[in-house]
Image 1 (cartoon, rainbow, N blue to C red):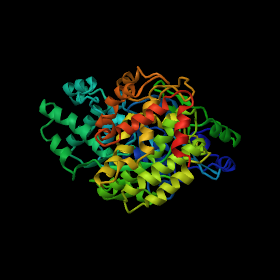
Image 2: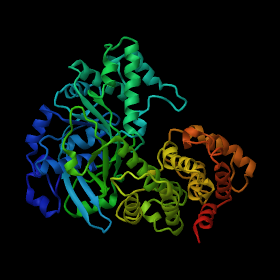
Image 3: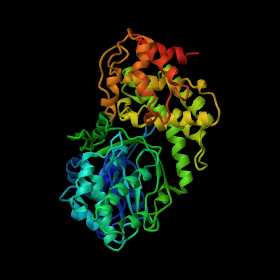
Image 4: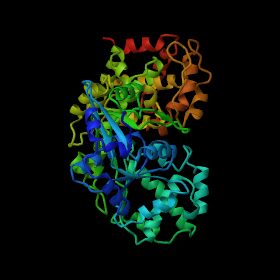
Amino acid sequence: MLYLNDKALADKAAWAAAGIGIPAYDRAAMVEKTKKNPTWLHFGAGNLFRAFPAAVADALLSAGVLDTGVIAAEGFDYEIVDRIYAPHDNLSLAVTLMADGSVGKQVVGSVAEAVKADDAGLARLAEIFTAPSLQMVSFTITEKGYAVKKPDGTLFPAIEADLAAGPEGAGTFLARLTALIYKRYLAGALPLALVSMDNCSHNGDKLMNAVKTIASAWEEKNLVNSGFCAYLADETKIAFPISMIDKITPRPDATVAKMLEDAGYADTETVVTSKNTYIAPFVNAEKPQYLVIEDKFPAGHPALEKGGIIFTARETVDKTEKMKVCTCLNPLHTGLAVYGCLLGYTLISAEMKDPELAAMVDVIGYKEGLPVVVDPGILSPQAFIDEVVKVRLPNPFMPDAPQRIATDTSQKMSVRYGETIKAYLAAGKDVGELKAIPLVIAGWCRYLLGLDDNGEPFTISSDPLLTELQPYLSHIEMGKSCPKCVHKALEPILSNANIFAVNLYEAGLGETVEKYFHKLIAGPGAVRAALREAFTA
């Protein structure tokens, strides 16, 4: 059996016999050079990073384009480093699941070092941050990772404590990150790009705002030198590029693990950390992948464009992100997530075989989204959505679950549906033409009840607004609630422009959502009946 470590990689014939590619470069030399002269540090050492950015770096190392790799850092779930990276010499096995059933298997060796952003790891991170060779620090820490304020606009207590403590007493990840940037400032105001690669709108701006919020408070309290904020504001020194990333990377799947074991690969055990991260020595993902980054790098960047990553103008990145997040993928995903949970599905691909759900996806994307889509020019919206609907979502070998996609839905509604609604209003189009979008919004409110279409309880995916939203719906009874009761329950939700980017009543859709919701709570089978009525010709 093959085990994932440096020693085992020496048996090249065994890996070839198992159909698994291995790094085609001197990994020991790469590790040594990267540690001495780091160019790229990445925070967020989870599945997406290993399946995409790290894999691109690995391919470029094998091609001789790069001679240094990536240093991975983890600021949230330290068990990832202790239980996955350390036992396997920072190697990963990337498994690519193609729609035709074929599978690509490649050991990714580009991670030269894995560091925890805990008390013990801060000294090493400070060394990396003050290295003149460092060009970029990237992030996949989820949208929640950039939050310094609660939904009501007040600072989180831990952030408030950090603002008072200053850089030496920083405890939260964002404050420690800001403190590390401050060390780079003290080391000669060295240039750097901080690149969010998270799947959220204007991700770089979210990162920038978080760092500047902390830094400005420290400067006001005289806890840092007076030039620090000017350094952060100087784009010739510090940049926060925005980006658009797209690669579906589900949790490690048991079927994939069995396939690997049958091929002679032993390290397949999935670890579930105390923070509920699902991770294994292997990572499974689809083949399509897109990463478009604003070309704003004061210290330059590794030649990732030779690995398919696109560097372009901010306006183009913005358009690409809006195309994907507002029209061509994310709205379809969220619709499937909400109704998949209500109907008891556990696979997105299985949902695409459901006539009503497949029809819903077509309406959301082609009929309601594409008429107001933003065309970025570098990618065709029509070709992109065709690939999503015909190849990516139906891929039976992609073990992606609606329960995963349903996580943090309250944070996604404004971009995935609110922007389309705003585009209709701006163009003078009749929002009354929208059918699928208000039905998905109604479905999400129905989802918040935590009862499936049979009236049986199910586990709602985590969401920061659950405790705020669910009490509004506490008096809703299946089959018994009248339209007035529905309005009373939904009005504070649907009028919340922070959730939907617009007040849905003022936009002309609130009453439509209420009517759909009333149908969805008529009793067992009401969800299926509403979908059938809406999408069966």
